[in-house]
Image 1 (cartoon, chains in turn red, yellow):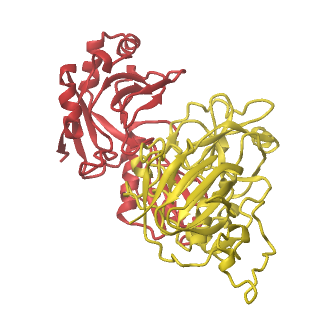
Image 2 (cartoon, rainbow over the protein chains, first blue to last red):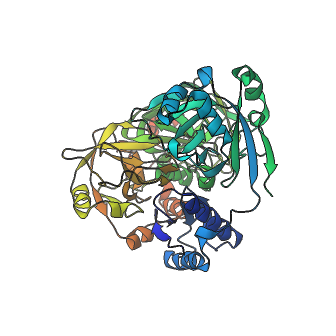
Length: 241
Length: 340
C-alpha cells in the first residue's frame, strides 16, 4: 500500500512524495499517479509534473483551497496501490545512436576502471540496458535515464567539469543523461549523441516523455557527422504496445 | 512596423516577460522577469496585463533609439535615465519622439530595471515566451546593433502617468516551510532566523548567494536525498552550508536540502538586493503564506490603482514656449519622486 506524503512547495504548490530514495517502483508510482490526476483534472489545478519519485501539483489558491486540494490528492492516493501500478499508456521506445570513443568519451577509461571492466565491455553493458525516462529536468526535454546495473552506482564528482558539450552522454548514480545544452556537470562524460532533447525545428520539438524507454546504439566516431546532422540524432522510435 | 534600436547595451540586458508557466513537466522552470513585481509595475504603468515583453536591465541599461513615436514605461530598480539628454522620472511612462535616444545608466537602487514599450517587444515566441532563460538555453542577451520589433500600443496616446506605490518595503523576508524543512533540526532553523545575511557578489537570474558570519548551515546526514522539485524562492543549502535563494531561472530539480521557500510577495526584494546589502528571514505559517499569495493579474490591478497622471516636469519639456502657461499653469506635483 502506498503511503505518499503530501507536502507544501510554495504557496501555490503541493508535492506528493512517494519515497525519499530512488527506486523503480517509486518512479512508476509517481508516473501512474500523475497520469490518473491528469485523466480526471481537478478544477483550480494548473500544472502537474513528475520528478524521480514525486508528483508536483500547482494550483490557483484563489480557485481551490489547499485543504480541499490535499483531500482530493489524498483520496486519489488511497484509491489504489500506486507502487503496483502499471506504467502509463502511449509510451515510446527510442534507439539513440551515440559515439563512445575518442573526443566523445573523455571519462570512459576512468568510469570503466571504477566498474572493473574494460572500456569496450562498459559500453556494451550500457548499450545492452533498456533505460527508462525517469523524469525530465534541468533543461527542456532533458531526461534522467535509469537504471544501469548496480555496479554503475558511481558517485558524482566533487569537482565539477566546467563544461560538457550539447549531446554529452554522462553517467552517475546508475543513471544516464544526454545533455540538452552545453553545461557544467559533476557527472562523467562517456559518449556523445546528436539527439536533441529540444529541437524547435522538429515536430514534436520535445521528443521524450517520462516513462519512455531509451537504448543507446554505439556507432563509430566516423558516423558523427551523419548522426549529428540527422533529425533526432538519427534515432529510431517505435510505439510500446 | 515600429522598432527599438539598441545602440549600446550593458552586459546583462535581455527580454523578459511573465515567463513560461506550466513547463515543469518538461524540465523548464517558469523564468521571466527576475523581479516579477517591478515587471508587473511596468505593465500596470502602460495599462497592459502581464505577459508582454520588456527589456530587463541588470545593473546597467544602455542607449536605445526609437524609430517611431513610442510610449514607454520605466520601472523596477531605479536607474539614471535621460531622453535626448533630459532627465526622466522613474516608475513612470514617457513619450519618445521618432529618432530620440534613451540613455539608461547604472542602477542607483536595486539591480533589475525594466524598460517596457507600450505594446511590448514583439519577437517570435519560443515555448510560449520571449524571455532569455539561462539554463534552459532559450533566447539570448541583447547585443549592440540589434533592432527589436515593437507590437502596436493599444493606448499610444495615453497621457504620461506615474506610480506612487512603495514596491520594496523594508522588513524581514518571509519564508514558508517546504518539503525538506523537517530535515533541519530546530536549532538550525533558530540560527537561520537569528542570522543577518549579506547578499554575496555572486548572483544572477538563477539565484542569489548569501554570506554570513558564523557556522555553516547543515541538514545533518540528509545530504544524500534524492533530487526533487525545486521552486522559485527556495532557499537551498549548498554543500558548504551557504544559503542560496533561487530566482526565476532556477533549475527544476535539485538534490541540496532546502530550508524553506521565500514567499513570492517578498522574492522581488531578494532579486533587487545589491552586493553587501543585509537581510534577515522570518518563518511564517502555511496559512500566512497562502493569505499573501496573489495572481499576477490581481497584483497588476492593485498597482494600476496606484497610477496617477504625471504632470510634465518642465525640465523634460523642450517645447516649453509653445505651451499656454497662463491659462493652464503647470502645477508642481506634491510627490515628485525623481530623486527617490
